[in-house]
Image 1: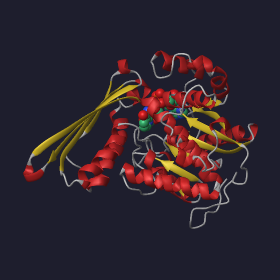
Image 2: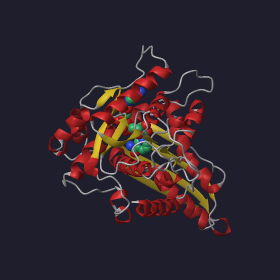
Image 3: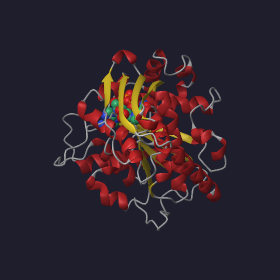
Image 4: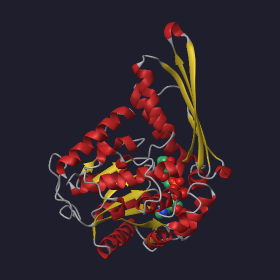
Amino acid sequence: MTAHADREGRTDAPGRADNSGRTGVWFIGARGSVATTATAGCAAIAAGLHPPTGMVTETPPFADSGLPPLTSLVFGGHDTLDCPLAKRAEVLAEGGVLPHRLPSAVRAELDAADAEIRPGGPLPGDTRTDEELIAAFAADLTDFAHRHELARTVVINVSSTEPAPGPDDPRLPASSLYAAAALRAGCSYANFTPSTGLRAPALTDTVADCGLPHAGRDGKTGQTLLRSVLAPMFLQRALPVRAWSGSNLLGGGDGAALADPAAAAAKNAGKERVLTDTFGTAPEGEVHIDDVPAMGDWKTAWDHIAFDGFLGSRMVLQTIWQGCDSALAAPLALDLARLLARSHEAGLSGPRPELGFYFKDPDGGTSAALAEQYATLLAFAERLRGQA
Ligand SMILES: NC(=O)c1ccc[n+]([C@@H]2O[C@H](COP(=O)([O-])OP(=O)(O)OC[C@H]3O[C@@H](n4cnc5c(N)ncnc54)[C@H](O)[C@@H]3O)[C@@H](O)[C@H]2O)c1
């Protein structure tokens, strides 16, 4: 299902006319920590059990931008695990990620979302071709939209980070199969992970012709968020950075996935890109990620920044970020779902650089500085308000 885009990226994309219906949010990796926290959190906020802390779209500048209300979101997704969502939420509550009583308070919403999670793939031994997998995933999305009479659906990849595919790999990586399926089913798409998604060379034409809004890649939630604030500060104060080194300790499913050096390399490339884009060249220094299963979903990120002051005096800034990864990521996933749904409704298509605020490696060319990205996002809210 594709639509024709004009020069402004406006289209007659599917679902544009319906302003009253509900919006689907389809998570790839629907049983993971981020997706479970987002699904449970949305239900808790919609029920008035918790304030929308960390949701930028719930702040005053977005009030009249026509974003779909949280109460109108319907959740589903793909995952290769079959652990019930309510059970995943209980495990997150035991780990202090979710408030203790939350899983039981939103049990009905978790069970409803659980019933909409379809088997992902490809699993070991799966003999389906790429085309068959894309068709199967797209059919799941179409079925979801029809049964719930959704105005539109946003697909958000929050699945485990994959290693980057090799140049001669004949198969598309799973993230790209799902991304292609999203476009085929007429859904907007966000890639919250460092995985390939829509950036597979084989999908270039499909993406160019899709007539749908999309954004990525890799959510900016902690260490890189801080880098996108601090790096412009050094630049603007004319303080040359000699070296910028970082180390991360984390557990959970993400920590386990990133224990694979190839997956970690994909992640670190995004963290370093913020520095390269700001300074023009990469300063000396590396980023390391260590899997510490005992930390669960909690992460410690340490940065060591060596810089020069007046007359060559040598100085150092060190930062320590201690955060709960899923609690940082979940509100951003909900923001992205609402902003992409609204973009789709407004007939916008193609990469949305206005959403660069949310990503380490944004689609569509944008400043790497958080302050500029925020200003661009606010201008986008204003533009959507004009079309509401
Ligand atoms: N939490 C953060 O702050 C943050 C920030 C930026 C990016 N991310 C990215 O978000 C993603 C999710 O993080 P998480 O902590 O929820 O991880 P997680 O390990 O808890 O969840 C990942 C889920 O993906 C599922 N999955 C794996 N392969 C799949 C496939 N082929 N098809 C469908 N599902 C599949 C797993 O079964 C699991 O349920 C990771 O890629 C992570 O790098 C997280």
